[in-house]
Length: 285
Image (cartoon, rainbow, N blue to C red):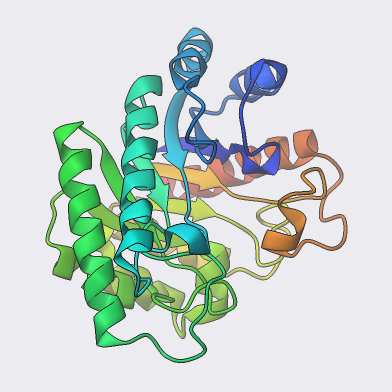
């Protein structure tokens, strides 16, 4: 198992000033960092990859769409922008040596129609992701589609729905991102959600129910780790947490109070938690 940290806890744009953070994560023993890719016009990801190579850190990319680039929008120009932005993010994954791009690539964050998703929207999303997937496959990049909870997105909200969507896309380099935070809100049975869709899950976010230190809240951690071990998941466990340090993210992720002592404390405790829980399953196997 590889253990990772999503850098959105610290920044939405990795620069030279974040090298001490990367060094600290490497020293702690993290294997992977998840690099935000939002400033698509900034061609500096080759340099980011070089820093990570020096530190021995593997990497993935993470991105999302705003309403102006919504892959399910009725306007074909808006949909085309969503696909184009994803292709640019794939380019930056290649530049920094990231073999995987994750996120809710099929729709826009926080953009709602006011009603249930339609068949037309589903089909637009399938066609958009098929185009993204073909481009990603040409460049050796895997995609992991993250469903979000109902308060952040309406097209896909559960593991099963996302797995069905991935089957409709029909691309070998596309899978499902299982996020414990969203699952805690949306799944009737998180164990069944993982077990029934295990063949499609290609990435896991470890996130507490209040976005604080994993292991300190109400997520059904014992059952989650048990079933991940049972189905043979052995890729990456990536921590996703948010705090008050990034003003631009506070209104997006709705963090209104301090959720942890410090980023360093959360990083250390989260890694220790994941390792402890996974080793227990390995020893019991």
